[in-house]
Image (tube, rainbow, N blue to C red):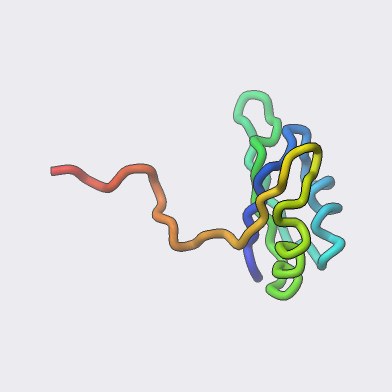
Length: 91
């Protein structure tokens, strides 16, 4: 199972529309869209889980594709990034 980062989504994106977009390339196992706390609208990015070969096909087809007048950013989730914002504890 591979987790895919999806950026460049419109504010009116929902799980159904993202599933339709990715289901052309394989079975979508799960979707997590990041939403605004106050409005409940999509903040423009989210995560999709698919099997490895299906995820690679989706990334190849959708990365850079124009969707609702904005290019999509579709790539594997970067698991090497550090959690949090700071450098750590200062002394």
